[in-house]
Amino acid sequence: MRILDRLVIKNFLMLFCLFLLCAPPLFVLGDLAEHLDDYIDRGLSLGEVSMSYVYMYPLFIQWCFPIAALLGAVFTVHWMTKHREIVAAKAGGISFHRLVAPLLIAGVLLTGVALALTEVVPRTNKISAQILRSEAPGRSWRSDFVYRSEEGVSWQVNRLTASDGRMTDVVIERPVTDDRNGLHLIAEGARFQAEDGWILAQGFMRTLSGDSAETTIEFDRLMMADLVERPEELLEVPPEPDEMTYAEINHMAAIIQRTGGNANELLVKREQKISIPVTTLIIILFGAPLATSSKRGGAAFGIGLSLATVLLFMMLLRVAGALGEAGAVSPLAAAWIPNMVFALTGLILMIRVRT
Image 1 (spheres, rainbow, N blue to C red):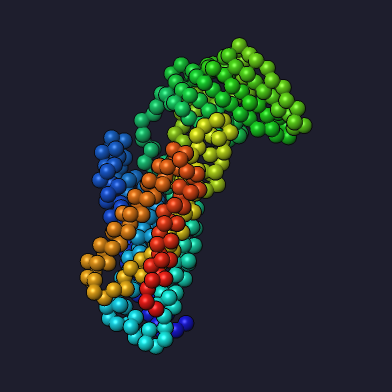
Image 2 (image 1 turned 90 degrees about the horizontal axis):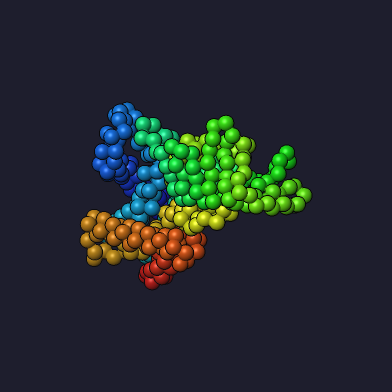
């Protein structure tokens, strides 16, 4: 590796790591200020809150990756421009594209780290949520939800009230296994009795066997003692998208789609688990050529440029995500539109830079 390459990498990583160390505490303070009243109402101790933020730290680090990469790229290129190092490199026959190649290589490696964090963050978020919800008040009802039991039974319910054990507009699915038939139940209502289990009213039951044989019956009243989930279990708060891995979101979205629900929000979140880490590389491609003018300001220029870029990207991310959740564009397009816009702009800027 050339001395110049080592200099570029060293300056970039130093700035990247500096921001990665300094920024997460700001997220912690902001989140704490926003939710402090909730923590007090739940009776959480200082130790519990502190431990929950320890487990949330990987999430804050993940949020900082694109911003840290942008700041590192902008300040590295700007300072080299200001101190005539880029001019000296060009005089030595090294083009700007070759000069910033180490930044792009670092961006690829950091993207890999960010992708790895997408599998770590949901697990740490889940532990943090368990700590923060440990004394949350219970609920007596729940509406418009999907639930999946450990045995693989999927429930889609319009409304459940635990006090009287009643549900309305129920869809229940149980997959076919080697030792039991599959079920697809649709009922207008259901009632839970401790001695008999769930009793469904006014609906249809379709039985599916392993040899693809199918039987459908209509019923006025159907007792389902083998559905062992109690109303209190169905009230369990489902994990947030940030608490699920890519595979878990994909699995949950498939359940919702199979039972006739709208899974666009989950599908957008699933695609963003890939697109947002890739932003680390794209944001370097975008930011490096913007910082090549020595006539612009110093630190103020770099900070201003970075903030403006981050705000623009967040705006595009939210707008595209809303379009995807509404069904105006596909979830895949909604997740990747911001990256495509910045990648195209970055390529144009890179081509226009004097080499």
